[in-house]
Length: 328
Image 1 (cartoon, rainbow, N blue to C red):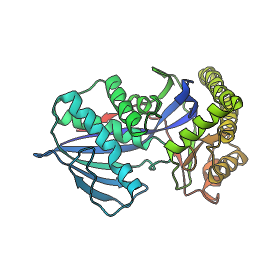
Image 2 (cartoon, rainbow, N blue to C red; image 1 turned 135 degrees about the horizontal axis):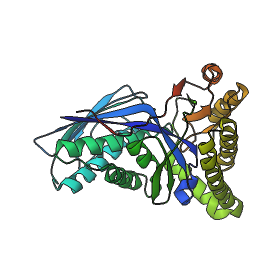
Image 3 (cartoon, rainbow, N blue to C red; image 1 turned 90 degrees about the vertical axis):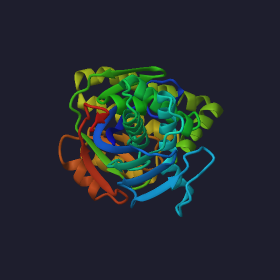
């Protein structure tokens, strides 16, 4: 039996634009998904999940691409529970050469499912790491991130970027632009997260931005403008100027809203944070529901969010300097 964990992440800048080759700066945060893996004597997969946003369930199935678990829950929940695990195990089988191996997989996550904090990336990275080590293979961090990206790319039908999986595998703050992924220095950022209890449909939101970008030149210009914010934000990170970072986050949120990926609840939380005195606030992730991230070293934003209609949870998040952790 082996166990690995990987952190969640927030985007300071750049979500959606990163899909089109623009840079992005995500940061790993200390909310983790932990995956325990034990080899089976047959080729089946058994997935048990305990998640912040789920009551918990167990499914057992053959683990083949054309065979779905027979369980009385929604198709979307089945996809969330098994899609990334299936892809992760496919990567494990490929890298180890053991094509017919099966596993018992247990997932415990502090990261809201589909909330924009990288839950799928964290589960995928931790699952690949734990399962390969269960078979006696330890991957370097770069290969782990690459194989996790391949999983997300397939599950999300070609609409994933390397940003999430590289960030949660590596930890800290990273810069991603196309295939160029590297760690960058960042100050101790006073991150506050607000969560509306919901989740956006990543695929449809990404596709919606793509459709706008193809139809209107100004939408394509908006995507490029987000890339310009990232480039400016990189230099500001070096100075640690929280006020300017916050201003750039505010502009980034406005551009994402113009692209149609915000929501009433996300906007309400963003404005609550700004009204409370946060340096800046924006949605994080695909949007459509889920989480916002704000910069505020005081307790004011967290308190304000807790009293904001539509905000289910608010919490402070520390930067996770370490990415994947090998627990046993």
